[in-house]
Image (cartoon, rainbow over all chains, first blue to last red; front, side, top):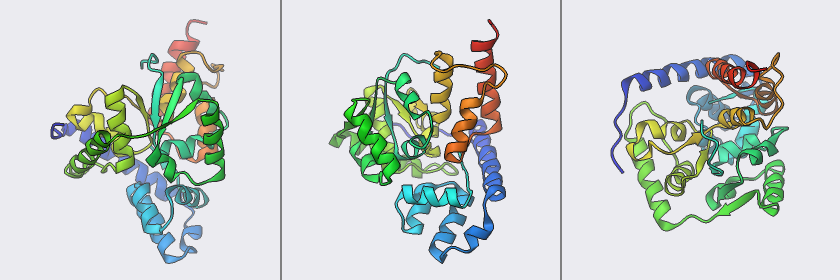
Length: 81
Length: 189
């Protein structure tokens, strides 16, 4: 298994896509719902909105990945891939 | 997009969204068997998902995949490599395992994990691994004629998927699949 060689054009494209996804997550999120959540869930939701990393966000929330996915739906935070 | 491959292996992120989709059994029009690894199965908890998985296991449409030590070791190495690439989402073990199995067995990897989707572009030994999201599965269903295409509304199935799952496709991707569907299914009519 060889070490990765990062193609700068592909990297730039990915970073642009991720910035766009972050903007959409922030805009679509139900912030009233998010701010009413217990601290651990609230911060995990914010982490997800900023990073799109569901596995780490669910660990932050102390929930199974599928339970956290359900909370994302309730908070109107879309998954964008 | 090749549709000759008829085996796939799915990760957790793919399954938990796909299981909520009204046309979820379309998956088995594209693949003869979709494998689910034991580590992925352990992450499935909801009644909706587990009851769909159980029924499809009973129909032999889904199959349980028991990972080998070699596959696990390769997956661990892939996790380490992904963490050395700046700016790229790291790959966690369950997704890495799907990539390892996909590479070794020539299965299509079904995932919604960004790091796993990007692995073929950034990790040299994985360039030939075919990684599909729900988007590519739906597109394949259109291109091979498994769904009726309303040429006035060629994105109907994609929109329904978004409605059912709150999983949003990018406008760029939707435009691209629209053109492909129109070229393949609408222009010759």
